[in-house]
Image (cartoon, rainbow, N blue to C red; front, side):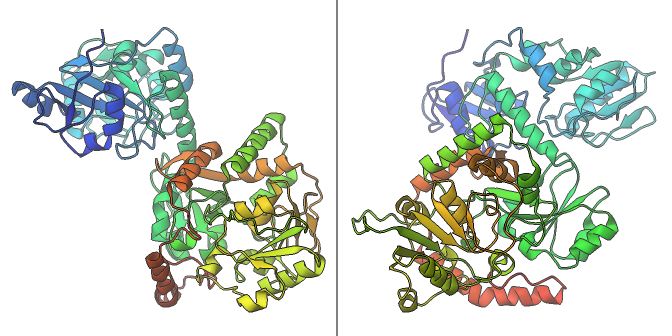
Length: 630
């Protein structure tokens, strides 16, 4: 029988405060002051603290990690499962059920799931001591000592899903210090000695002969009553089966980082997100700023990822000589609520081992995908649904800008939108061979559309004064009918019939909304039969349907990160987060306060030249003049 929900709870530490919302959802109680009569003390995993409070007559709710967590779970970012015990009895949860064993055997989940898959680290026939990944080093050493004392003539291998757990090798002990796959290890072992219910469950389901350090436990003890399951991203309660599937998805993303990673040229404000994208079974990435430093820090079997606009010129040659795979990294196409130039972290990236999408001088990985990939019906259907969701949620790359609800828009003229760009941007310098400035683009658009109502939208970074490309207002108005700086690009695309651009992402955002697009350069979305291509040699040799372009660009090429949970997520999940953040923020032209705007301008004028001069002395390539501040 489920115990009655505690009427009120009080926290005993930082971890409990971090998990407050999940604990309240699981118990249906609410946190209050500790002096409230009947308030239950909530303790994080410490038996001694729970016992001390019990002796004082306080009811105690003990909270511990659940049996399966995603590799990215922490109390600060949310735990996918929690084990609750109220005064020593399991609180809540549902029984394990008959089908759970088959599900666990298929998914092969265990603990935090930070171990690499498979492997043959444990020889056949081994006597294995499988450590509890949640135990302290002292508890692990005590457990191993008890096993050794009970089996004095046996040699053991000690291993665990979190590594060797602080145990030292001896003549009778071979300690594997790196994390191992407990499913593979138990399947190889002749006997497995365990101290916790989750390890016992894994060992039995793997077919091993199990010896427990304590009372015999089963799948019910590990996964049944007392265990509560949550969405790893939103922390809301969900069914156990759904949670296990989501943990498995996150584990697959974690294992995609299947080698050590060296990140090059990543500014400090970008590092938390890039670390979340690239951490894997070999641990978090190593950061370097110079090419020689990156080669020196790279462990055997590593890969090097460099921020594309900050990649040292000779890094490619050095990586080739050292046999290190090199990829370029850049922001994705659904990025944030706010500008990168204002130090707003991005929630999507692209990792490109061939080139980079905005530089057409050689095929990027995106170009290779679009040229050669097959697009099965289920993928195209997902892309169509995603495209419609982007439109319905009114989302773009940066999601800034004001709306114009006035009735001052013409109804008897064709409306043409001309999005300005940063003129020293690599996509303009390398991808627009004829029209290479905002002034030239505006003139070309007017010449091609003499009777249209021409809207000129300065690029947000240019408008903020961070990047070059400004056209004086009086000069712009000799060609454009209206300057629409500060307005949301979605609001403008709702009104426009046609877009003229060099290489702006606004052209792609217009395409997915059904507008016609004329392209004066060679952006990634041109040349597939979907745009009017005005640059020479623009044809790609293949025709794509719109949702095939969307599939390659938004599903196959980028990686996505939930910016709240700081865990990898799907494109659809990111749309939910961006819509929530955008709707919660007050509408503004640039998502910047006046104080922040002045501070950022000062950084660009004063600080950046100093930082670049110091980097130049260290031999680090100078990024393009207008790049984001350090």
